[in-house]
Length: 68
Image (cartoon, rainbow, N blue to C red; front, side):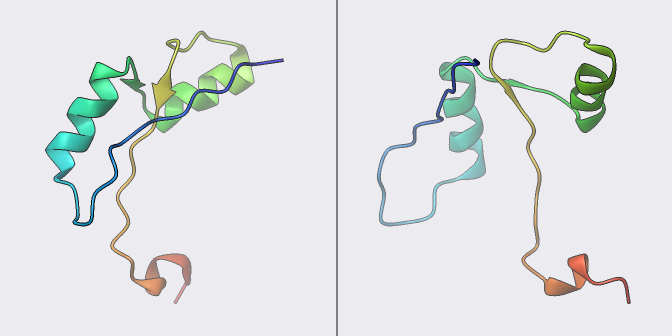
């Protein structure tokens, strides 16, 4: 059974700068990976860092999920 880890951010009433979030991830020992790294891990068992994270950006526009 794998041990889950959780990324912690301080509570804030305003939006946090992206740079602050990235620095917090680094300070907490997370390492960014690419989607292909995760795919290679699942398919071939290739190792991942101890605390991998994939960072994605969503514009919030519903069109991204519609194939129109």
